[in-house]
Length: 102
Image 1 (cartoon, helix red, strand yellow):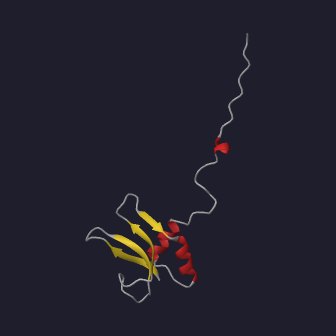
Image 2 (cartoon, helix red, strand yellow):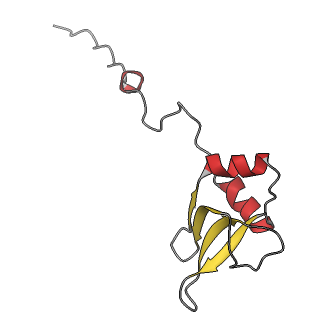
Image 3 (tube, rainbow, N blue to C red):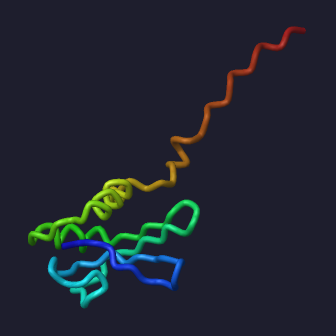
């Protein structure tokens, strides 16, 4: 199962997204840490290892309801689609100058 494990000081929660056997305790020995979730930042910070999550899903791991929402809201970046726009395509053509009357 892929679920949250609570860490952090009292009244200051921070969570690890872990792969763990379903019958183990919430903060019990996990198999692998596949991300973090910090609800105390504005906006909340989610850091996921999408490749590892896809692997564990492929071998039968299930999401908890909260982790499923976090993964849905933070999809894996599409390879090859850079967020930096192409500078040639971004250039705007200069407007044609009006003829000058003498």
